[in-house]
Image (cartoon, rainbow, N blue to C red; front, side):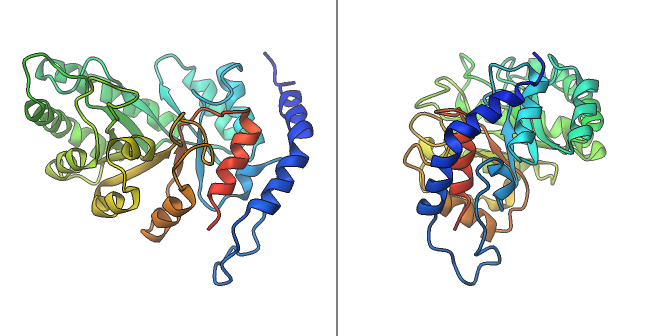
Length: 306
């Protein structure tokens, strides 16, 4: 489908723009007079441009009715500076690289290794090495500096400690590859209470322990705040404790895995804490827009005000 899907965004803006602009004016917290961006206001047509944090739209979860490349265009039209996505194997990488260059939009990260087969089993490590080498070539084409990897689901007959040890072995094996390519692997702990029952890695302590043992500036954590909230809470406290191993942040609210402002997480506070800790990388919007992408983008922008 061609992006006269611009009409999609234009129509959405026409319907929701006035109400959302009013909400932006009314709902913004009082500005800190000492903040450099104290007078910042939200553009109701391009909320992504109004943000201090550099957000990356997850185009697997946003604009799902559009063809993949049109999702990238739609994210750019909302003013966001970057996107992220999941597997690269089902994508036209050359076309994506050309489009990203044309739009001036960055690709923050993609998934290089998913849930299965798990890197928590030694028998899969040969394939892991081959896959990471290939993914580094894709990252080079896309000018991507981070790739997400997943530990794996529970393996019958193995303890959690044994599975985690195999993840360490696996990451140590591919560490020289990503260090040479200058592409950071970001290991993602999940949550098992809501989304990923049966996964072997959840919460920050285990992920921090694994990455500290691997001890590489190119092997860090994909610190998904949604998963961390469900697994352990105290988002700011745990983030501070594991800060040396944070490679990338993602977010979604809970319950519902929708955009900020739809659930119980006070993202204004959490994003402020990340900024205070020195985080200036992209923050992935791995969330499902609850009532359309324009309204979700407005919710994201409102959460970025402190």
